[in-house]
Image 1 (tube, chains in turn green, cyan):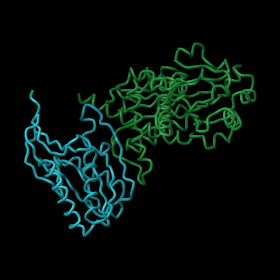
Image 2: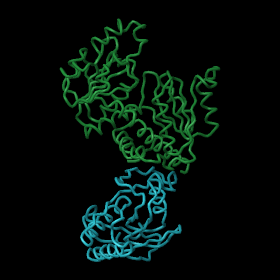
Image 3: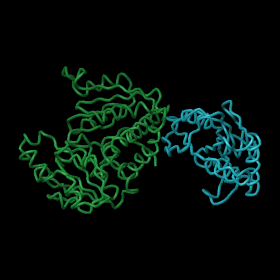
Image 4: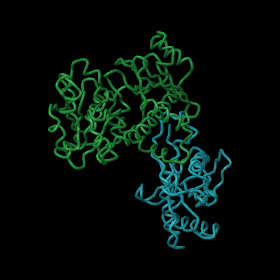
Length: 313
Length: 180
């Protein structure tokens, strides 16, 4: 199995072998993070540009560390400190960046399809680090790696994804990845936050937290964005938390003793997750962050290598 | 297509036993030694050398696994990106004598990569190189310390070390280049 793609845009377009290749590569690369000198020479002389049109701490930092551990030069463009604020279009900005000969551009944008549009126009590799409510492929890959590390396998596992499914690119990427690898997915949340016809993705729907989390191997809690309340999709944070917040009591009453609690971050403590659960023994939230660096190293390694191979041919 | 057999099972056994004795003699015992094998067959050979040394000397020498993919000088020259399978050296190499083990020594480029990879993990006291087959055609100034068999070959031939753990048999053969 070899990586053939110039870009990583969605999980939807990957086949199971490609997903497994990225996860396997990431598992092999994780050892670098435990070294005294955290650097290998693999991407020496390669340039990676982080192009972030939306605020991000975890994802941007994670790509930056991943690139640096592989010896690439990493340049960060954030919307707030660049010409983006002066009205330059996404494509113009990207073309100007391309004129500086990067090998990979990592892009986050509020519009679905932004990464794909860039990938069509740029010769370098493009990684989608989140496009609107569409996909966030590296998040799904790191989630799958985290689950596989803890459970030993993925096939046959049952997962509940809880919260604002409709606006979540994390949910969408995970649903695609999990279904492709033989996992069963239940999505749960208030009806206003569940997309219509979501069953077409091959998932079950639940409108009661206690039912959704019963007997599952993994519970993935999503961040509730405050804007959803002002948009009238939920009555109040307090009411959301009362029905959909995962507390220790609820967890003990309904979930399995060996369940994993995941969250893509940042956590709204006291809204979707109580602090005892976020910091408790079931939580693998910090492992997710650690695995994020390994997954992004794997993606950069596969894309940068593939790009050079294409040029040589 | 197999062109010639270079070592049979018994000859392979004898070569490994001799190398084990040479390692012990040269290092005055096995106390400060560690083995690091290059994936995949170098690791198997390192394990076999460690077993022999344990039988001769009573010392259990740790065996680590080195994946040199991240250190290769031909990344991007090959059509496919090679698969990274990971390094696993669960012991410190600082101050140790590392015996690097590989099955076939050819251009020396893998060993160059392995030396860089090892040194990134710590500062060993010394690194020695053990190979089952030295087939010549070096492209770098690298020389083995322990050799199972020196084997003059043509560049176009390939040497296959076949081990029971992976291939179901113990022997070394020369394979002729594919026609066409």
